[in-house]
Image 1 (spheres, rainbow over the protein chains, first blue to last red):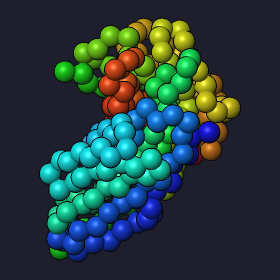
Image 2 (image 1 turned 180 degrees about the vertical axis):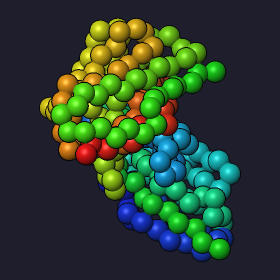
Image 3 (image 1 turned 90 degrees about the horizontal axis):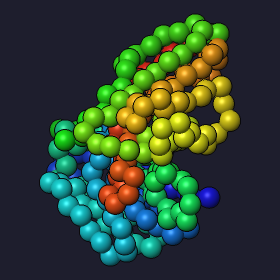
Image 4 (image 1 turned 30 degrees about the horizontal axis):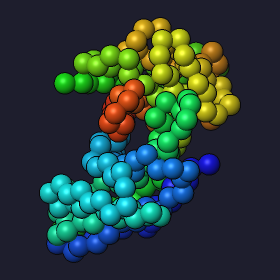
Length: 114
Length: 113
């Protein structure tokens, strides 16, 4: 069974204070690892897909990296508008069925203060 | 470009009443469709997915059902709601092959009273 564990559950940063969020996973054949941002009361917004160990993706102040066991979302010089819950999800290769479904972690709630 | 519509945004229903939530996707054909539920402070739990019209797979036993009457329409239903059905319901779609990231609707906040 695919499993995703995210840490920390909550993180409070000062504006400009860089940090990293962790996503540990176990999956039988990783097809892709996904990062999403979710604002309160909204649906998750897609950020990145990582496919293989060593891959990195960047978008503004966010950088996602991937190893064989975990992924990190690095936030450089965050701003208050980066405050949100960040979700990690994995997708496994399946011989038949499955429909590209994702298994999600419980997320890291990030609060960036002035 | 592809868009996903989900409605209503909020819903308050009494215990024992029926439920129908609807989701439609525009700008793509034969998408894979999903219903997730998100409880407060918890991750997204996959409830149902569909790879085609009339094809529904259920992930967890529950009081809900899903249907896909048209290629880009996905409906979540219940005949009699329970208090435990309260939550944030999200519809999502993915391409059937190739890029497999999921795109989500804005969600429905369901409160069963």
